[in-house]
Length: 180
Image 1 (tube, rainbow, N blue to C red):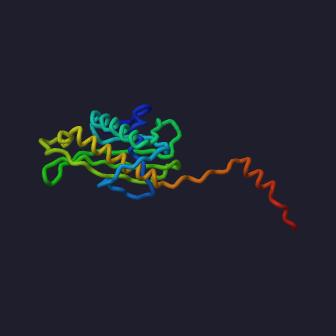
Image 2 (image 1 turned 120 degrees about the vertical axis):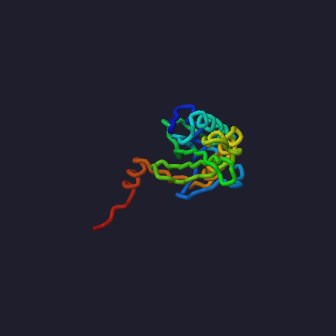
Image 3 (image 1 turned 135 degrees about the vertical axis):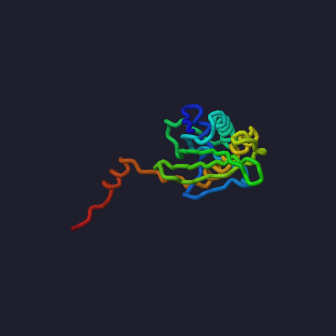
């Protein structure tokens, strides 16, 4: 099941998904990091039932705000764009894991980072693994996602400023003539 979000819902989601440099990061024992001033847009979250996705998106937005991440709507300029996937699966010991994967893309649409991890839920019952995922587990996964993204944002290289056309023209005019 795939759900697309726009406007206000994307803002909170975007905070989740930031990371960098074609690496894979797992969220184990990550400290909370604040990452102010880097515009991020959450483009999509798929894989989970609509109710879980909506709850996760709201919690992700709250976690991003706590970390001072700048979440922007999908149609606004953003330094990074995030796409995420959630899945529930039984573990060997009978619990249920909520796993998440976030791909963070830079302005040139190149994947800059992959963030992944999982939170363990209660013992599953029946054939639906989502039944073993409660609000506490969803909140933990959203918080861990925000921590991993913020950690990437604080270490992501700042893109070089591109000189505008006026600067290029002035530089060309100021260059001394070569003798032939």
